[in-house]
Length: 259
Ligand code: 9WO
Image 1 (cartoon, rainbow, N blue to C red):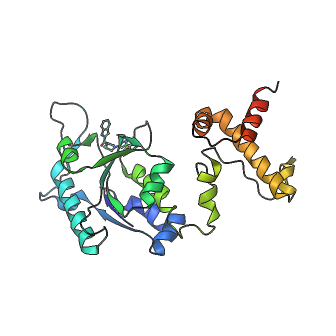
Image 2 (tube, rainbow, N blue to C red):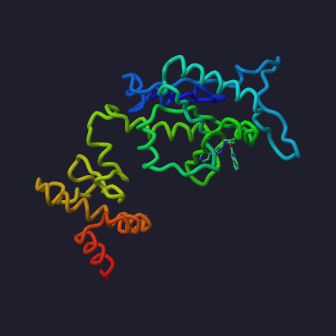
Image 3 (tube, rainbow, N blue to C red):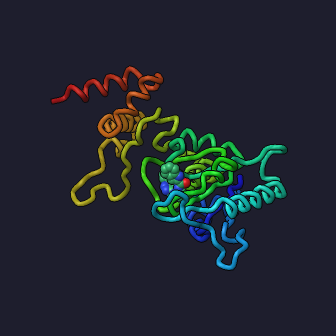
């Protein structure tokens, strides 16, 4: 899997390339990352990548031509590296609030692919003619504004790379995450580690029982309670897709009728 990042700030991507789970996966060759700076595709003395908006208004707009040349260079390099299936070309993705909101299901789908060319905008925005001609999809991380697309791209990368086979030490970890299939779309239960009593606050007894069925039942109950309290929309979605058992429904019912 290969990602080509079009960015004015290549050093930012050291965070995902060199550190933590994604860094280890990169060191093991599970994925690669190449940055392309639009500034390197300018041809004027000042290496200009932005200009004032037509129609007026605040701030500056990223110019289409340096972005287009960076994408063309990335495409050629991917072709030479055999990064995509024969005849296929990588998606060109703009991180922006206009896009579909990224989800765990989307991350799963991405993790089956060969990567993408990710466009990180800066300033007030990107010339629409570049978007119209090159961008195949836009991805949003949520309804908020960033100073640039880089952090959004890194969130996308992290969510995808950690799902690659071999990325995690403990193969179970990705399976047990919040939103993993085994949790049926519920939030994960709380976690505890040593000491057994911390500042007079003990670890919940079922976790110390050594009885695996009791532990699983306690975790399921905690997942349901946490999700019902904080994300009732996820309870509804799990129910609508048949992922709640009769036992789950009983726990939720009993909980909502406690005084
Ligand atoms: C932002 C925008 C807002 C409304 C309509 C169109 C839009 N396009 C862009 C855009 O391409 N923004 C660039 C990246 C340049 C300005 C800073 N950028 C950005 C991306 N701010 N916020 C995001 C972002 C990305 C993913 N998820 C949430 C926010």
